[in-house]
Image (cartoon, rainbow, N blue to C red; front, side):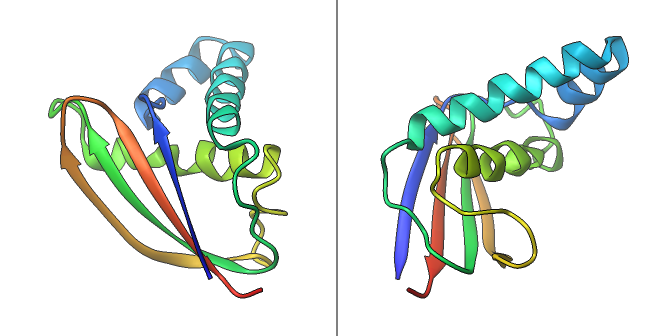
Length: 120
């Protein structure tokens, strides 16, 4: 089975999270919480995934000034947000079995389309 989700908006990149963590641990924790909640809010009530899954990401970057490896760090917020929203049970190795693909392109609005494959 397959489920597709789209997160619209820019999630914090690795450099932004690192800078927040260095400023003060609470600032870093707040940034992570806000990003995780943004994801959870956008997928809440959508198709749930039972059991083990693999995942694919297609990123749309709104700026060519940031490196892709910094932006795709946001997978952490996505998986945690999916867990908070009840889409996945957990992002541990028991359930999360791998990444099928990761692609990106540039566009006007930042977003990420997530495809989850799972067996029911």
